[in-house]
Length: 278
Image 1 (spheres, one colour):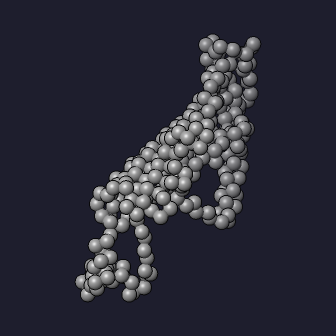
Image 2 (cartoon, one colour):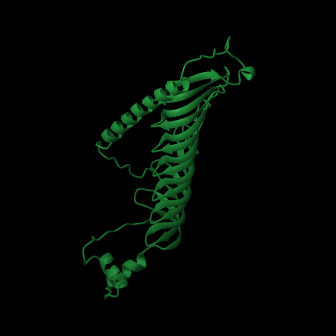
Image 3 (cartoon, helix red, strand yellow):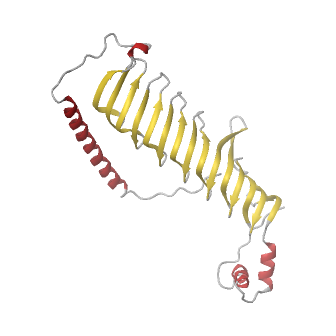
């Protein structure tokens, strides 16, 4: 069956407009009756578009609606799942054809909304990295866990496809960081555990670099490769107050930096990414 999409225009005398008039109680023409009868509804077999794409599934008013499978001829990509008004919406799986091996591999399985990844889902990257968690308009947004190719694992909050908020990253060597993130880097208060050396750093981070804090021994007796000597204790008058004041100054400068960054970013032109399936 070849799906031929014929459009007569959108003026007041078009068949589609006249069909709509009938739904509102106005006089219906013979052409409008034919148009309404020709609309695809319900479960259908394979329907091919002019460019060779194939869809098998449910329809409503000439739009993919319900459960169905779409195969794009040019790329070989396949979407199988729920549809709403012509776009993936609900739960579905997106699979791509790898040109080198001619084999299919799953790229995403999870929730969709208006044709974009939205809700909870799992995405498989080409370098064997995996993300499972929340999505918003095709971007990692909300809570999620990222498994990196090197073996590191991040678990925490995301905003606009970047680590932002509170999160923990565990490195392959056993070390781990627990703290604040912004724009994909460690920014703000955090703790870095050097499990291999038996030390812990507590302080402020700026763009992934420790700026102000205190390093002390932590679990030194159980560490596999501790330092030769423990960290000596320093006795200073008002030590806690000095450290607190230094941290406050760094945080103030950090907040001023992000305010300026946000203001500058708001001047950039907005780019809307279209739906990508092919």
